[in-house]
Image 1 (cartoon, rainbow, N blue to C red):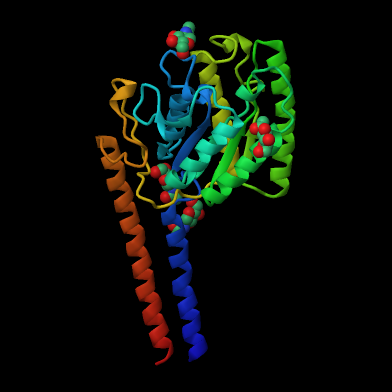
Image 2: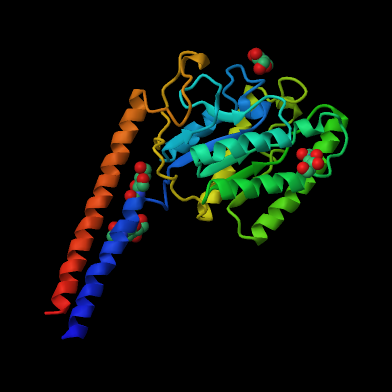
Length: 304
Ligand SMILES: *[C@@H]1O[C@H](CO)[C@@H](O)[C@H](O)[C@H]1NC(C)=O
Ligand SMILES: *[C@@H]1O[C@H](CO)[C@@H](O)[C@H](O)[C@H]1NC(C)=O
Ligand SMILES: *[C@@H]1O[C@H](CO)[C@@H](O)[C@H](O)[C@H]1NC(C)=O
Ligand SMILES: *[C@@H]1O[C@H](CO)[C@@H](O)[C@H](O)[C@H]1NC(C)=O
């Protein structure tokens, strides 16, 4: 008798857990709460719009079915979801402080990190870049649990001494990536000097990409994010009230929207996405509830 009902319980529980897993939709198009972290390039200096790589990357990801909300304590660019955690001129130490302040506030599930360009401005070798950036990545993992970090190597620069410094920093970053892989950390290093990356011909000045350069950067970031997705690194963003979708309308001017990512609940796109998210989670909750009821009755029957 007991064994017979146990089999029924198992039969009821199996499809329930499979359905619940699908409702969370974590495998194919996980929502991406992206915190772009860096300095002037991440901010968008050198592009005609201030969009940096961020607008194009966002378009690629939303086309692939991801809800995207960019987060950060600053805004730049002529698109709605233009939050960014970047300040021109920042060196690794300053980027670290800014990222550490913002990570717990926004709880991104994906951080795009480019740090170290300005540490090379003097043209001298920076032997501690790798160690310090590695520590920053560790802090991001701790401050935004479950987050994935996609980090870029440093772009080509037209000033020879600065470029030599950057090449050396990139060598350090490769070692960081190897160590992260050994620890099975949710970390991907993308090569911003690889075949698809901007060259010195794609710069607006000696250091900042022009619009074409930023388009190339977006493609390289996208490849890194695809790698992270393929490895199963991405889990849904924390439920802390920040909408899954940051909106894809076009802001009339960059200054028009000054609310922070955390407070960004206005705008039609954001409202629509909240409604969608709510109806989705409502469905998941209902199916979870129905499964619990079925399991309860099955359990009760087992003792009859
Ligand atoms: C869940 O999704 C997977 C892959 O998309 C599919 O093979 C499976 O049949 C789905 N399960 C249910 C219960 O819908
Ligand atoms: C170069 O960068 C500046 C400052 O970001 C920008 O105003 C200008 O439009 C850019 N020029 C080109 C050709 O990209
Ligand atoms: C997950 O969400 C995406 C985008 O909304 C959708 O295209 C895909 O079919 C969903 N997958 C499942 C298994 O529900
Ligand atoms: C790395 O951190 C150490 C210790 O805080 C500091 O002395 C050094 O200047 C840092 N280097 C860089 C490139 O940030």
